[in-house]
Image 1 (cartoon, one colour):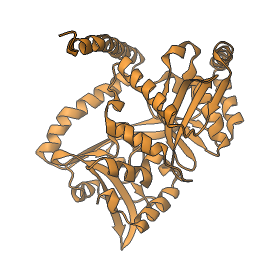
Image 2 (tube, one colour):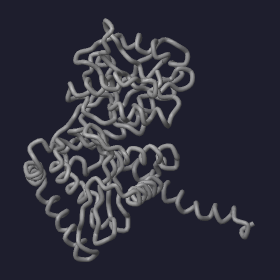
Image 3 (cartoon, helix red, strand yellow):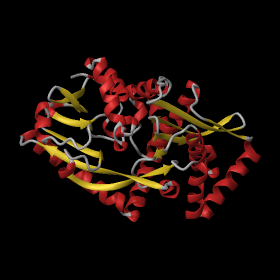
Image 4 (cartoon, helix red, strand yellow):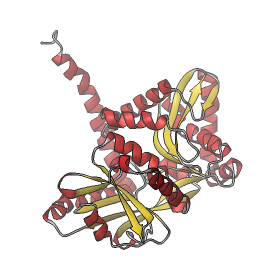
Length: 367
């Protein structure tokens, strides 16, 4: 069904099931996120799984042309899977048939779910900031693992305060202007580093704005910002459940890059998250160096592909799977990763340099 067709009892059951398992404690698996995606994207669907008349699971997904499936949110999200009672196991090809899908690929699947586990091809840890023992316990682990890095970050923070203004941190800010500033930084980062600018798509901006307005005990959007005086220098927008904050869009003003404001922000964010009763910050899998330094735990995520025999499934495999495998090889090799990153940044600089010229050529005066 479409998300909007879920009844009150089904929404209640979804939330009830999600609370039963720590592995499902992720806002991207929340019914609130699925409902928001359904309002913005026509291809979002939900499979409702019943056993003996009782709902035992939900499977949110995207159904694209020719029966090609994608996890809900696709490249935007960092957690996919079944929201189901513990140990539920069904034939995944029956699930695809019921969903009218020929194939689906996962790259951030909750590892170990009985339905999908036989199809997992790459299982790896996603770093988390474990706050279950409180912030003091967390920061002691960080300092013990890399005292030099911690000392350097705190030195840069004091330097920023002296040179730019007193450091101030805003937790769960309702300021829409601050959110737009953050998205502007992130858009600039995508362009500078040669990545696809997600915020060039209006529906993604609308999604983030809608998530920012969400407020409940089990689900909310959380905007955090670091200020030097009255000047914003770094921030993050993510989603949370009652216990977990998931990293989504961290960014900073590149004019303050010499102060390492991004890492500084994450340390403040961890402190306020712990004070707010959250147990962890999920930073998502990826090869960023700062994640390795800040992590004190990990969650396991998997890649998987499930398909039914069909020409479209075969064509999709040829177009997607070899590229994904190559990406994994690059990400796992530090030398290749740095080389690829340099190429993307060079492309980003060239693209930025050409953009003003192109705009001028299209102006009446230039013509």
